[in-house]
Length: 365
Ligand code: AMP
Ligand code: MG
Image (cartoon, rainbow, N blue to C red; front, side):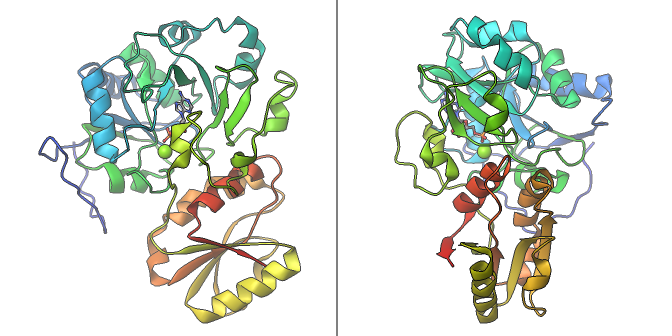
């Protein structure tokens, strides 16, 4: 049954195949999902329809990985460029064999450590997977999510589910129910609602398909935690998000602008005292909202609106609130968002990567 939800700014872009569709909403418990509801969603996946579902990172926009027509619908529904590959989600290790062609035995310690969980691994692709999923690449990105709803949906569908984040292309990834409704209502057959996601940031991506393992996207897992099982993990400079990614075909999606809020975001970087002064100057020029840490909030001018993302001692909390605040509807009352920098340790590397990519401008203090 469709829930009567009045949404502001509900962008309805007409699908290429000509129509908006009725979206079925299913509300399921995130820890103990109702099998009858998920069977309906799984049936839709098997029929080649699109289903939005929660994962522990962000909400995903899922389709049967083997169904080329369904995969095309994913790109249409998001407005996603077709050279930006999708991540395939599996619910057990047997499924991995249907997706990859590489001998993964030497990575079993890594897989035991990170799966199920918020880490995507890139291997050589199995030829049964359509080229449209991987944007023509010979490698494929795979993740075994830990979210009970995601696991159960994949298990009941009986097929690996290809799913990018369930946002319109370019917007911040959806971490809350209202985000997926706003972006995907009438664009997909079914939306499974089950509250906010846990990490609120997209998965860590590691490429294992080309010699030395390489971090392609920082995420919820601290790269240092992986050193025990991946001692030679390479962390390229572009993962900081500081440098423009200059198009090595290693990960095509990296070249796209991401996570953009609807109003200008200015990231101020530099030493703490200088950052405080610079934020004060910038905030004095326009009606501003400052995204900051608990520890720093009282240093900014009193008349400025402050939104606390969390404590600098708990960067997982900051990460989980970041996209929620970038997408907050109340932001439109302000002319600009100003963000302070966070320490680049642990998940802080991912926070700064996302902030730098979301920023319309980076100011050095
Ligand atoms: P999203 O699911 O929206 O977070 O996007 C998935 C991202 O995974 C893409 O933007 C790519 O950067 C990356 N990705 C997916 N497949 C591959 C692959 N075969 N090789 C490298 N990167 C990939
Ligand atoms: Mg995405």
